[in-house]
Image 1 (cartoon, rainbow, N blue to C red):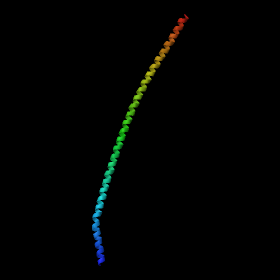
Image 2: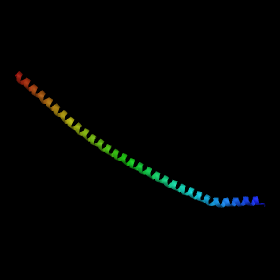
Image 3: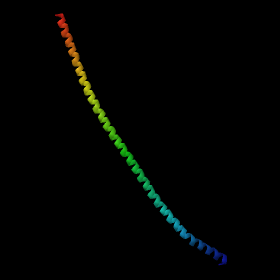
Image 4: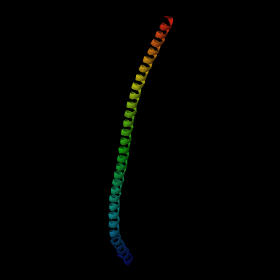
Amino acid sequence: MNKVEQLRIALIEWAENKHTPLKNEIKSLKRENSIIKKKLQNTVQDDEVMRLTVELDFQKNKYDQCDLERLRYREMAANYSKELKNKREENNRMKQQIALLKRSLYEKNNI
């Protein structure tokens, strides 16, 4: 082996010795980066789950409120319907009484 070959081999070994720790550090950093990405992704997913849970609870509460309002209006409509029925019955009774009074007035006038 001549000196150029020895120098080239020494340079390659030196480069490998210098780059091996860097390669290991790069692998370590890549591994750490992937772990952090997974944690971040899980955190983002957890945040998304929490946001969706809060939104779902809000919608459930809104639905419950709407359902209570619907029941309240239904009860009001039923009460109004009963009152209207009572007023109609009273109105019919009054009409019958007026008709009876008119009939008795005509009978008295004709006698």
